[in-house]
Length: 253
Image 1 (tube, helix red, strand yellow):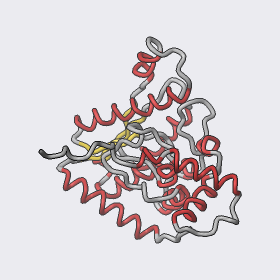
Image 2 (tube, helix red, strand yellow; image 1 turned 60 degrees about the vertical axis):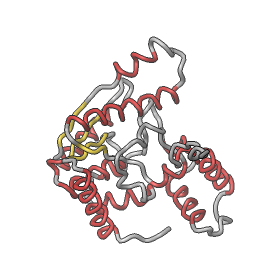
Image 3 (cartoon, rainbow, N blue to C red; image 1 turned 180 degrees about the horizontal axis):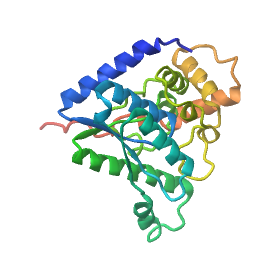
């Protein structure tokens, strides 16, 4: 894996976020706070870039969400001293599934929750003249572990160039709460969900394989089952990483 000067990288990302917001004509950043490490780091970088008073965190639980997630979200907002809103998305989610799709599985429901949360954020962004701040990291981006037009729908992605292991390291460099850094990564879309269990590989190994693939390094030292799984994840999610396709320009007469 590469070696990063995290203090320099923090300064670079902070300057980018400040300049991007200024150029956009907006005044604030708004971000969905889940209680997890990715949203914690994105929020911390934004607060560093433009000041804590200009960042709004929004916790959006569903009725099945873990109570620990709310405690961790509140812990982060208190640590960063940023505004924290709580909006229960249960009525919005249930209104659709209870009436129209009662047999929907957990994946469909989870994707719907992610998209509802982003709808809430984009609505509030208009109210507060804010840009929606993303939370996707490079490990999730390359494997497609995000909901298209859901958690990946943001105005700017401050940590999408960082692998998950680097997210943890940068979070430590910024002094974020260890409770949040050390918790098991989860999207908290259903009970006992775990990112690594869903992906089928631990983040540390995933990051090393992704880095080796990126640099065309030898993959013989890795578990070949895991390597094959990562290749499949990359291939299956390729459509998520390209702009919406459209036909070429019309033919002229």
